Image 1 (cartoon, one colour):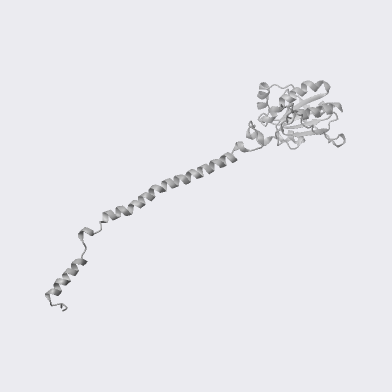
Image 2: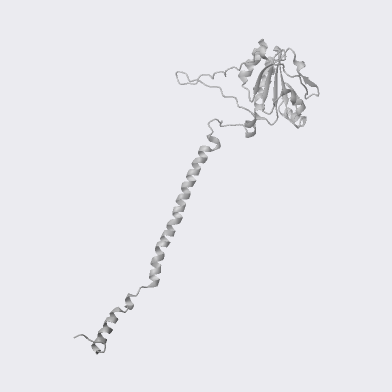
Length: 263
C-alpha cells in the first residue's frame, strides 16, 4: 500500500530522502585550499618564465657576439695589423708588400723586387706646368731652376702619415743621385703655412728643398691635389714622365729615376 501525503509514514520517508540530499559538512570543498592549488601552477609557470627569457637573451647575445667578431675592424682581409691612422688611409693608397718565395728546403728566399712602373713614352709626355712657389729661405722655387735635371716633385702635408714614410727615401735619392743631375723638391700644402711647416722641419730636417703651396692660387698649376701624397717625376726637358698618387714604392720610383737619368 502506497503512503499518501497525509500519511505520517510518507512524511518520515520524505524526510529521510531529503536528508540524503543535504550536503555533508565534512565533504564541503575548502575554498582556501582550492585557491592555493589553482595558484600553484601559475607560480610554477612564472618561475619558468624568467629562465626562458634568460635563455633567449643569452642566445641573442652569443649571436650578436659572433657578428662583432665576423664584421669587426680586424676581420677585413685587406687590412694590415699595423694600419696607418684612419685619416691617412682615406687620403693615401698603400703600396703592396713585396712577396717572398719558398725554396726547395722550405726556407724563405729573398723577396722579389716589385714590378717596375713604366714611364710615359718620351713623345707622349706633356710639358710640366710652370710654377713659382716660396721656399723656406724666402726665395722662389721655379720649374726653370731645374732645367736639364730630373726633378722629383712631391706634394705632402705635416698631418699626412704616408708622406712621412716617403721622406727618408727622398732624402736617400737626393744624396745618391744629386751629382748625376737629380733633385727633390717637397711642396707642402699645409694651409697654416710656415707657422706649422717650419717647426716640423726643425724636428725632422730634410736635405732637399721645401716649397709652400698653401693657397688655391699656388696649387692651381698642379691640378688635383686632394689625395696625398702625390709625386711627379719630371725629365730633363721639363716634361711630366710619371705621376704617383698615394704612397710610392721605393724600388719602383728609384728605377724610374735611374731610367730618366740615363735618357
